[in-house]
Length: 445
Image (cartoon, one colour):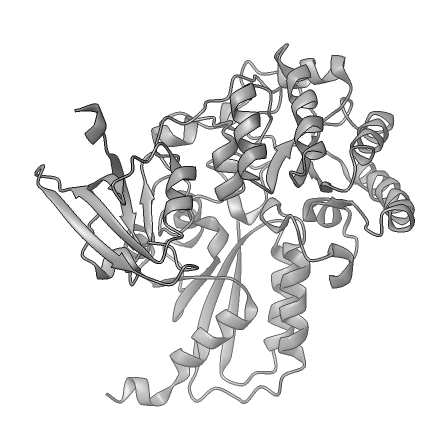
């Protein structure tokens, strides 16, 4: 029966080819075109065909054969549990700053899972260390050209690497990084900066070493260490203060100018938090060079400001009825949202209430909106007059879901605060929803 081993379908995207063909979540995928599927990489290769025959097993154990015809660039619409299909590679590091080790107790089990899987990096953009990569995996990555990969480097100093990663295998990660970049695999690198460890001259050394690996190491994101209130028994770390962040910005700007001349690219990019911490102006749109590490918090603020500029240049017609909305954000994003309110202040019939939400779930030191939980929002909003609805950033939710960090759903939050909640990507989407509120015909049906 090994040949009939299946992979649990966790979700079927609405309107996808698989959904149209009647495939259901909870079923198992056994074969594609009568071929076994070893993992998510095999699945992605096979699903690119124009015509596929799926062998499936329902929750009751009934075999189903489904034929699907689709364009080559349209995915089937299936996701799996686990997302790698076969067993996920776990992290064997004990990084001094590991955010998962700082989670409070009582969360869903998946929030304590540390993955270090090249498949998760290639398909979902997860950062991996390469410290436990086997020779077979390296050969497979190169053979299939699984590129780009997202790699946590932190430092190229061998002694410091072992200390930061908490493993003797840290040397392997650097060797594997050199091997993959030399073989044509494009790398997006990340350095989590810990004051007193890998900053200053150590950062200069690391960036110099990464630059020598060539153009396939395409960019580096510098992000500040994240510290929660749940660091019991963990190494002592300090957060960035304003003055340290200012020095870092100056250091990086000097290096960027050198790399612009030598590489034709700035090469290194700072996370938004450094600019927020120092109340500095965010770099311009062109300075992010296409936003290669947007999901890492590098350039989100600039994209928000771009939308804000577009909004300010629009001729905004007044709303047809009185509208009152609430915007809930973390402390770091507060100044940006105040700018949004200032742009919309002259729009007649619109009232905006800005609520700065403290992070009690992970602790007050965590100020970014993306790490707010449902319970944080509930505590800040419950009992208040929230008007026609509450707007939040869609980054507060798990990807393709309506679930917050603490497992609360949007519906559960709406029930407790007695107001609809609207996750949005930015100011333009928010304004579009506000205009829907004000559409008189909507209320005359």
